[in-house]
Amino acid sequence: ETLHKLWLEKFPKDVWYPGDYEVLEKGYKKRKLCYITTATCRYEGKADDCAELTAFRGFRDGWLTEQGDTALIEEYYDKAPGLVACLELCDEAEPGYRRIREDYLLPCYRALQQGDNEACRSRYIQMVKDLETKYSH
Image (tube, rainbow, N blue to C red):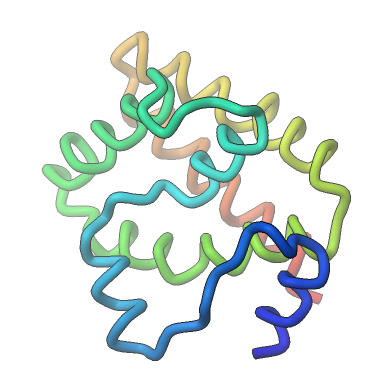
């Protein structure tokens, strides 16, 4: 509720409503969102079906799922929404998204283009760990 209130104060035109556990779980299980990548691309004005998001979703739903990394995917869905909210509410969004783009997403995307799925996986995991460290004070 506090996060919702702070969000609406900062972004009154970007309304969302808190859901209970069942609503949130159903949304996460659909796996349509790549929270951090989606938020970064949205901030940059890119479409939801841009090449980058399509590649990351394909990576997650294809190779990563085939590796049996479902626990890793679920962990990401647990952490990523809060990390994006913290970036938006507790930090300056522009440099935060720029840093995410340069330090993590571009190298991950290049790795995917080169077929190096393991390098992408490692970099993305590091991004989540680094964001957790930054925002869990």
